[in-house]
Length: 287
Image: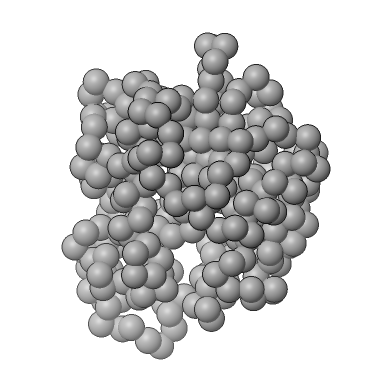
């Protein structure tokens, strides 16, 4: 297994990755809701390392959409790797679009940027071969989503927005097309819980292939480190229902049948661990 070492962390504002350079807001800048989210090894780079082969396409005409582009990482990596692809990227954050355009320019990537909320009428039906969905919050099981601490579920509309994005992406995705995602998720001892409810949200028969970026962790250990000395009843109830937490990336693919498999990744990201995620979530809590 190839070992990927990196000093990319949440306090890095200028990132170098695979001969590309990106500007972001590090957590130390504390710029609030207009911040350009940091690039973390286990998020964008790990997902790219594991899933980039999924982006290889045999047709000459290939359309790709990066939803919530942020720094433009995914759009830039795809366009510079597959220059014949037509790459679109959108974000509702005006600063994100500005920074993403600057990052694209310095990396010589020609990308179609759009400042907007993600809506059905942004693009044609069945237009994209690939859609990248990596929102800065996690989708929770319906039975607990309203009991998750406010800031951990993406605010008032975080859960609704991600579900909406999945539904809209289903509209824009070609038959046989793929959605690439990065997600932390509650789960059982066998697999992340999104394997149960994403097919219903997607409203199509789909294949899910996911990869564990980190080994699964006991929910109690994660929660006690992120919320020490508080939310005890919430933590106790949650652990009973969902004893493990997963950190994953993967693909959703339109298909004629539903199939869920765990993939075997060929890269090791041992320079980042769950302890780094504890620190990240403790920083997020300060907001």
